Structure formats: structure tokens, C-alpha cells
Length: 500
Image 1: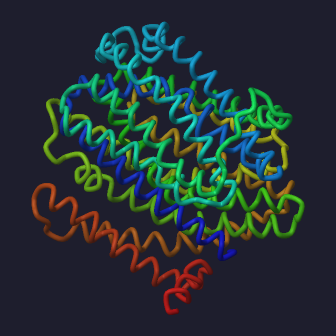
Image 2: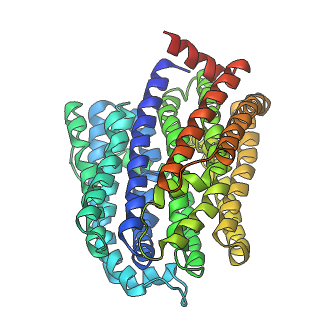
Image 3: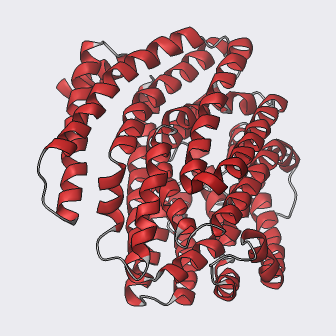
């Protein structure tokens, strides 16, 4: 693995860890300071700007902008960024007006007629919180510029600003859901503003010269497949929320909590390394051997990280969830915590396949071979939705979590087959590496589980926190030892670096 890619991946991983941990604090305080009725309504309202978030922010925009921006001279890149800035500002203004007017209809899409969620409160919160989309969209543009220039520190830490602002608002105004929604908007603005110093230092601020640039059409063209697949995922999210709204109270918040832990694992051990590799892969698209070597290195690293993380999430779900959310929960939240445990455990087994898939999809977009990933992504989104519909009525949110596990593994197999054909990627070499990683990770996670199950622990929060902390340390030590014994390259390189 190139040293610069390693450094960039570590920068992103540390920033992502800070972001996800502060996000966990935010989610924990939500259950401690707000009753169940407020948290379910808030999560429904927050879901609505998120329906557009991956399209106009972190997903489609970033992935389509970076390759085009990197191919342009510096000043042309700034003009492209300026045109995109203007277009985003205009589009967000139009969406804001539409969302305020159509809020009751949008909330109605997410809730079943007999849902226990407070409909009126969800509509009110939607109208307050929706402007956060504009702040996050422009923040994502700043992230794209800085990531393309391989200046990863500011964008990696920017989401922490959002979480800190929301945490402060919750502590100052506990139980007041409308003020919480306003705090989210202020947090999104903070996420944008903290990146301005890095843009100024690098002389990377967008140059505003109108709504169009010759390369903007190519960005939009490359966004189209992302938009299609992202739109399908958001339809899936809408379906999931609708199904959850028909389950007992707390199910919507519990599923959000479980996805937050799942996103923590993916963000730290997959998305951050993949983003560092994506920038480098974009620059090596014309050198097939280097491209394949970098892709292989990235997949191996993500496998090395996601397998033990996912197994620990599966086996230590109960103490982890209790340590985060079961401090002094507000009225009705005990059921939410139990439901969260039921959803978190299965999702642990989805961390590895979804983590690897996140990088395996990117070569198609770098080479602008977009039809294959569109077909693959849409097919598996449809399968996921079908499994949600089939499993949710009988097995609740646990069945929905297992649906995500099954879809992740099936998609991994399909992507490995296609990349063998298009890039010469070796599934057999990948399987051999993954087999050694699993051989090291399973005893390590098993040792942590045995320790938690057999030793006496203090009652309450301290006991849960100790189980997670001690179990994680023991698993890490056993995993490191077995990885060295099995001569897994990623561990061997880390050991050499540590000895230096």
C-alpha cells in the first residue's frame, strides 16, 4: 500500500471516528433527554432532507465531481466548482420552498395511516429542519474540492462540528423538539464554515462566474447513474420507514440507532479508506497495472479492518447498545433500546460485505462504465425492498436487518465476478486473503464474547462499558497475534511500522 494512501486513510479514519463517536453521543442524548414520541417524530422529519442528501451531498455529488475536477487545471477546477456552487444554491432554494409546502404529504409517505408516530409534530419538525440540506450540500462541495486535492483533514473533521452544535442545543433545551430541529440546521451551517480556512489556505475557493461551465455537463452526466442508484436507495429508506411506522413505538428510532452503529463501522473501516483510495485510483485510471494493484491493496485493507469489527458488533451488541443508550433513558425509551439490540446484532455480519462493496463499485465509475453498477445496484435495492416487505410483518426490524445482511453478501459475489472480467481482479486471491482474516478474527471475537459471558461485571452502565472496552482490547490483541502468525501482510506492515 502506498505510504501516502496509508496516511490519508488514517487521517480520514481518525476524523470519521471522531464524527461517528460524537454522533453516538448525540444519539444517546436524544434518548436521555427526549421522550419516545418526540424521537420518533424527529427521526421521521430528519429522514426527509436525508432523502435528498446522498444525491446533492455526500453520495452522487462527491463521487462524480472528484474525477472531473482532478482532470482540470487548478483555475478551471475552481470555475467548475463555482458553477456547481451556484447550481446547488438555486436547486436547494427551490427544494426548500417545495418541502415547506408539501411537508404533510412527505410525512404521509413515510407513515402508515395507523402509525403511532405524532403526525403533526413530524410535519412541524420537517419544515424547520429541511434547510439543513442546503448547508450540507454546499459542505459536500467543499469536501469534494479538498478531498480531490488530497487535503483530507478539514473534510474528515467537519461533521464533528454539526454533532457538537446539536449536542449543545440538546443540553441547553432538553425535551424541546422544535429547537432541536433548528439546532440541526445550525450544525449543518457549522459543518460548512469550518472548511473555509482550508479552502482559503489552499486558494481553492470556488470562482463564481455563472451557472454553467463546460465540464459541468460531464459532472451531471456522471451524476446520473449515482442519482439513479441513490434515488432507488432513498425509495428503499422511505419503504423501510413506512414499514417501521406500523411496528410498535420506538421501532423507527431503534432502526436509526442500529444504522448509526452500522454506519460507524462502515465509515471508519470502509468509507474512509475507500475515499482515500478513490482519489488515487482516479489518478491511475490510464495505468492498468498500477490501478489493479491499488484496488487490490484497498480491498485487502478494508477486509482486514471490517471482518473483526463486524464480528465484535455481532457478538457484543447488547453491552454496546446499553453502554451508549441505557444511561438514564427518557419515558418509553427502554423498549427502543431493546429493539436497537435486536437490529444491531445482525447488521454486524453485514459490515464486511457492504464495506468491500463500497470500494468494488468505484472502478466502474472511474472508467465511466456506469451501466453495470447501475444494474447491479438497482437489482439489489429491489431485492432488499422485497425482503423488507416479506420479513418486516413477521420478524419486525430484526428481519429487516437480516435482509440487509443477505443482500450485502450476494452483491459482493456479483461484484467479484464482474471485476474479474473487467479489471483482472482475482476472486481466488481475495478469497484466500479473506479466509486468513476470518481465521484470525473469529477466535479473537470469540475470546471477547467468552470473556463478557463468563466473568462477573458490575451492574449498570459501568459494567456494560467495561465489557465493550475489555472485550475490544482482548479481541484486538488476539487478532493481532493471530494475524502475525498467519502472516497477513497488513498486520506485518503495521508491526514493522510500530517497531520503528
